[in-house]
Length: 197
Image (cartoon, rainbow, N blue to C red; front, top):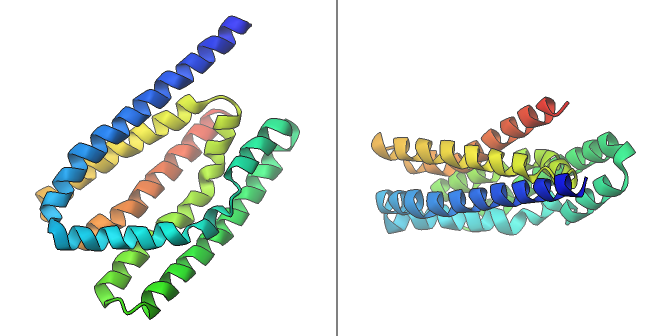
């Protein structure tokens, strides 16, 4: 029994290490290529839009992440209720975030292009409402599934970004990629969750 538990934790640790390594490799290699393709001005616009969205995304998490994991560990019989409640609260928080981002960008003397970029990126927050599935896997010591999901997302995202560079895609396509990554993560989470029964 102890040996199985140790093996489970070791497997989780290895997969988390692979996920971190993939994130670093993808971030450095693809990130540099994207930055070179976009140039300082356009890359700066995307970075600005990301910063605005990240600053206001506190409304989407509402500081619940660690609480959800703790409650899932404590109350295994109420898993569905906890996950359902977390989904609706985070979805509401995501809507508030998108609205806040729009208001801040609209009244913040941003040009139309900046507002468009900020909105395209902010929609990714709506898909984070399904992060509860990740928290469920973490509470079940199934971090391996979370890591596999992230590796798949990072790989697909890197390939799509390289393709966008190849076809000389516009700036908005790279901004929308933030939301595309969130969608890929959501689809994988749902598939893994269903596979776990």
